[in-house]
Image 1 (spheres, one colour):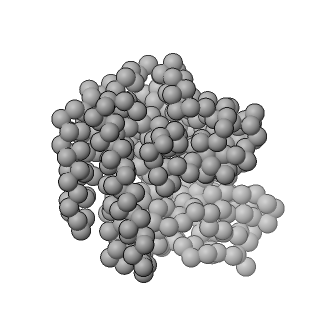
Image 2 (cartoon, rainbow, N blue to C red):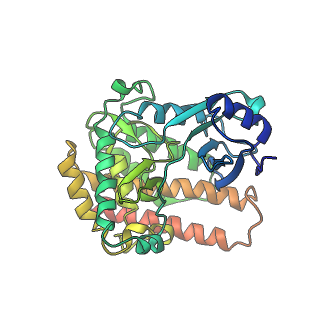
Image 3 (cartoon, rainbow, N blue to C red):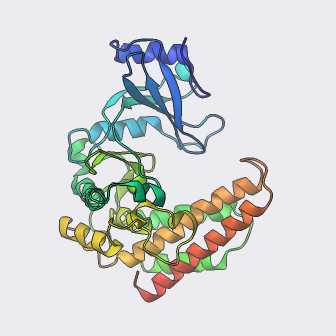
Length: 345
């Protein structure tokens, strides 16, 4: 009998998978790899040890337009024959009667996810610069792709990406926050007034960093994962996201300090940006603005999570988590203010 955690109907899902992969040896076992408020990821293993990966939305109520499985499946399918490594798509199910929600299945990619500083320190020192260079080069390769040439020309609006992001996250905080944040509002005003001219449009991953990739045994990126925020627009937002998560900023706190690239051997953020600048045809001289924007954007995202926790929507809290979240948000806003004021990282 199949083994299945919450979020998987083993009999109907197995039947559906076998229509795409009749070579599998049943019963199939399902194991949750990652879960939470984001999309759920399951390892699917047959009796011979063959593995696949299944992605579905979180169980329970989800926001409209969020957790779009068809969109993720479309993106990895479109990128299959490009220089950006992605898992090979097996199929997409949009029949809710099979598993209660849309889901898609993709091939399992061998490798490891390097999540935090401890993981970075566990990497062979000889492979650390390989990882850093491959991560940077893979992002440059993504940004070189003409979306129309791979069938993604209508994935989203291409113009005014940063202005649209600024409107979206400001509206979310205005509508959902339970407090007044003067610096957040002031930064929004200043960011809106100084948005750099967008240099064309490309595919924006939306959350690009080392732990959102699968790294092969040779240290190179074997697959880019977590495409749920992918759209079209200003690709320098991705470069700024990678810079934000590099771990070089001594002012950063919390999770932004506990990153794999902080380990010795991955190289500095400036070296990473220099390599991207040499590989890409984009001018990155305005990158401090984009990094300030990403700090501001992350503060908005975490504020939304904090409010849901404070309201009890994600479990009982003792007040400590709320206080820590407020401190982290305020710290990010202060860093954004310093970068935007000085024009330097």
